[in-house]
Image (cartoon, rainbow, N blue to C red; front, top):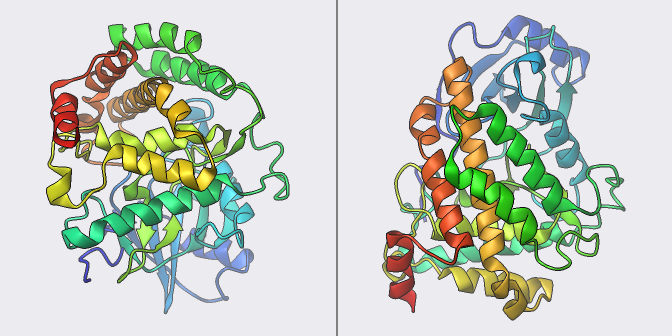
Length: 373
């Protein structure tokens, strides 16, 4: 199988985007580059949060991930590349495929923002989660590989990795609902009814035991096909990317977030809830859920009973993130040229979340359900 996505999509960085001489000196001081080496940079497109660049020095290729602005200009706890660096370093050798990180710089005097550098991993990033580059009969294997890596992450012994302070061990949903409510309130242009309703409904409907420490694991926070790098020729995840939302939390938050693509329409949110999954070769949502539950020895019927809460929670969270993208676009610090278009989906996403919370559905959700009933 050949893919046109053998590396992240790239575009030349603006000449002033990175102070390459200063950056090269800092990397030499960290032992990442040898003395006298120079750097070239290419901006990596895709992603909404932390801008990234490919760094080339001779035959060496690195990736730099940076905050989009100085810390003083960002919302509290947003764009946490320091946490991203820490979790990537901790996961080395665990069986969860992650790039090897080289150095973290929290000194904003080097290039104006905090950043870290990691090795470049050769592989395929599928920006379209329907995997149009892969023949339909082969696509299910890619979804199974993504499912298996998620379960592998959730089985990692985070205590053995020294991550006891990476997040609280209980109260995950209560805490995150408060956090995303504050993020939404800090970035909304005006109150949105569905978000206001979800902010009240969600704390009252947390499933029994979901806020306890019993199932606490490392959660990625943004686990979806676009944040996975696959082997160039086979259905194998070679790197899980974009860890800024990682924390200690509840495993079904990641699973339900990964399932949102089955609920989202095609287009700017890159879902496939309005498409013929059989023709696409994509397994049904519940097959994805059942496979994960089998890997994790979870009771599928119990998970399904509470599934509307987990979906509504993640749609609430996603809407808050989209409102944040809108705020960055208005402030002129958005890292993606389609930020305005993507941010415009914040309110529809919130409405879908509220509909699911109320046991309702949207036309495309109903259409997808009828196809697979």
